Image 1 (tube, rainbow, N blue to C red):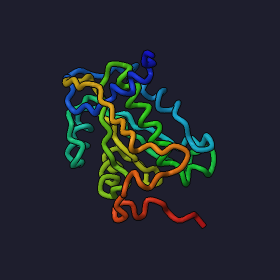
Image 2: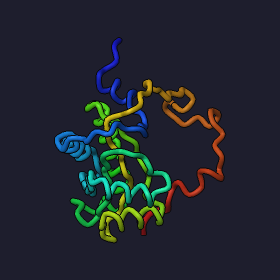
Image 3: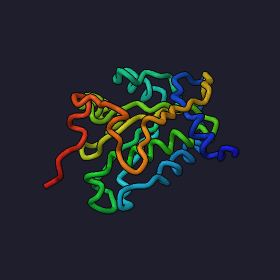
Length: 194
């Protein structure tokens, strides 16, 4: 059985950290925005906003301020959550998942367009949120989730599959497969909102 094209693109998605010194066309960036906003969201709340950055001096300022975000990409897309513009209150609890789905759509679409991209985490690090917000004049009620650097790749990486049969449980969870470390998983399940 042949692999569907969409699955091929997903498998080719790799974090690209080196870029050619070539601008990403506005049309390409617009297509990435269309892909982002085609993402699913809880109760169709769509709590996302995006800041597309191509100005070299602004990109340099972001690189200076971010420990993990110093790549020389010609463009960046900052994915932000804004519960205030969401279509409903589901966004209060699910904006991170919704915006993450939009970010993943950008990463996958970039591959399909011949671009490379890398996700740089911002939320929930207070110093990173503050830095990105200051550089881009993002108001306090809007939270930058991540930065996605985008450009034409100057490196080629082979497709990589991380498939691991041990991580799949059929019908019911099988605790014999893995012994997770409780110290690492504490706090992953927040308490119910009151």
